[in-house]
Length: 388
Image (cartoon, rainbow, N blue to C red; front, side, top):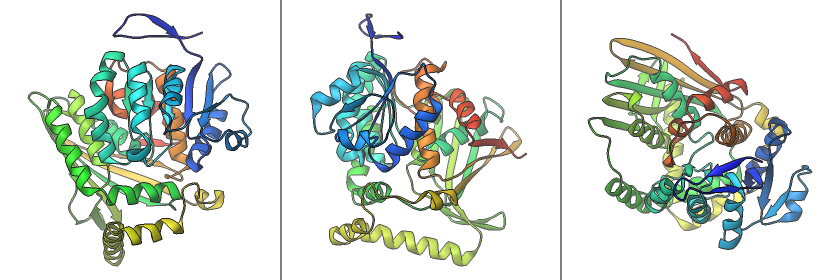
């Protein structure tokens, strides 16, 4: 049986599971469980967890079922103590996630989630980063479409550029996908909590030690005409995550700049996209409108297999530095669900079994796993390529 060493206390503890997937009864959780059932070899000890045993049993998987509830601290503590890696799909994380992170940080258990909520990312840093440093836990947020293609795509790009020089990277996303109820709930939660998000970001900046001798700027880009199309600002959690990776990794150079965009081909499409996003953001501020939007697509609902089969994404990165220029791409199929399930499952397998950097605390996929995870995902069908 594999063993984990607790860094702070220097004793050896044996755990029954390598990986536990919490929230496997939900839409994305079930897809992740199905992927793990295909990808995990016979030597991987893993289990599914959630609050409804019958729902988990209907998955039809030949793995242990653990009953736990995000509102039950004792059950979360038991989950964290019993596994080396705990991956959770239970969101919105700002409401349901803090207890899971706290118990992983305490138990020295590596933690993974799918959050796109900047407020949650910053809050857990302030509350749990130093505890995780002491226990040896890696706390890694945004291990799905938020934000692996961008975090690892930028890492893939900067490694093609000279070292020790200022670097500039621009990212451009094109995609076709349908949302699920869980995704809609998280988006509405983020947009409805703008003040809390700003406040948590300020608390993190006050608590975090900036990198010495290096500067990082990572933001949504401005609207512009580029490459026969139009690039719009993409105000998601992704540039925030890229910026945290750049602060943690010297490879990003003494001065690093990242700008994040959504790419469309025509000006009418750009105008329609901007207007739609603006209207959605305004409606999300109004409680009656939020309830009406949420009723259209409830958590647990999601696109059909046929709809997912027609979905795709392509993230293109233009990197410049030291007089050199490179263009890279990260591309795959259905980004919100099939590929997100793959990303989360492969991240869990990577943390459990691969030779990853010896770091602890709150990290990013680039700083916690980096090249081993890129290689895993590439073998699994998510392409990381260089165009020039």
